[in-house]
Length: 430
Image (cartoon, rainbow, N blue to C red; front, side, top):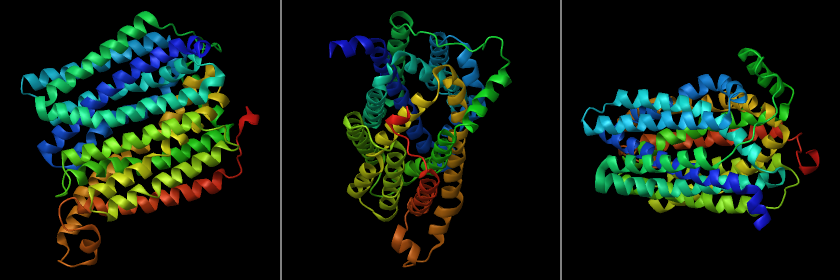
């Protein structure tokens, strides 16, 4: 145990402090969603927060990884984290002067997303350089565990502070956790540099092309990325619909939304523990497909047809329990198959291909709820089939949308399971 700790000491410090900072950032993002929905009552305007965060991430990611492969990983992470923290300070200043408007949040979220675009591939490569190969699956379980724990704590802490002390205290916690992570990375963590393949002399577009060419030559990785891209489209429509339904339904509200998100976190923690102790599977690709099929084929339908917070929480557990297992197996395949000196470029190409559907999904979800499904339900006569199935009150249009994305999720998993069935990636392939 002591030997393992020595090998992973730097990574564990990085993981722990960055996870703490992610908790603070998540609390601020959650509180801003509550603030904006209470102010506007619009699913689309609330979804635009996430659109503005992801748009620069998608557009610039393909270049960010090539730059990350050239730049010092530690300095890159520090600078990006510092600028992101300054955007949070700007939100606090606007709140204190009573000047905060929707467009301020969109602009600041876009800047924050740009910093995450550069920081994320640097952080991925830093983790690879700090983790011995034999600990890839275990450390992936740790990352899933911290993300899941944050999912539990974020809505609970953010909702409590938002209700008791308004949003200023949420932002204060965010800035404190940033300071802990920033100082730890700056003073106590040394990140070794990966091998360089003439990156300093390489033109930026040539570096980007190398990442795309590598993906083209590795169809398993490319197909997995496209699979997750389709899943992310469904999942981002889900994310846009969730607050619109839960904050509008008579038996919903901020507390119910927080409880459901907490159950998402509890399920993810349980799944993370499962991923950490799960024996090496014979076929990691099959595990990924089954995990996503269970997730997308259960929760959306319960959210669509049930009208009880208890059943919504059961849906959250079913929808998120297998996600950490999917992430762990995906992470092992990526970190094993992609050379460390290429990971920044390949991960950046992955980010563009895998995540471009997220802002599309948020826009689509918000627009469909505000412009199609809520008006459609409102126009239905009493006793119609749609109102009998999905309800007649505000939020019922979002419930109808959950049914549609449930069908879409099952279709996506079926199609890609057929595409990926010829790949049987296992430890012997490493």
